[in-house]
Length: 126
Image (tube, rainbow, N blue to C red; front, side, top):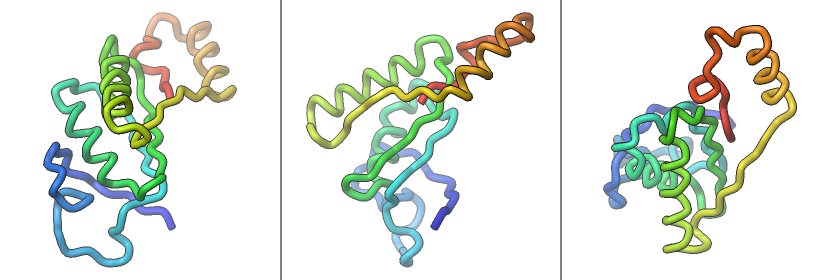
């Protein structure tokens, strides 16, 4: 079962999982997998994004972040996740993934669109 939801990011850990409504049906329970795409660019919301993502997952769930670097924003977000990991182990584990198709598209963009392609804005990291 796949669902798409708009989540209110908050650091309030007492909020329900989606931060919007305390009434839940079976389809609004925490998820096995959460996909977060292009959400780490506003650094002042990093803490709220971490809390909201963790609240949205079942215990043992997986969050997959697909993000461009956006200068130091992704690295700073990753450092925050590592801080959460070190304080609450094994709540969070982090690993970088790569995919040959993404790498191939990156190389193609570098060679064919070097005038407009900016790796820090256009190349996703997982």
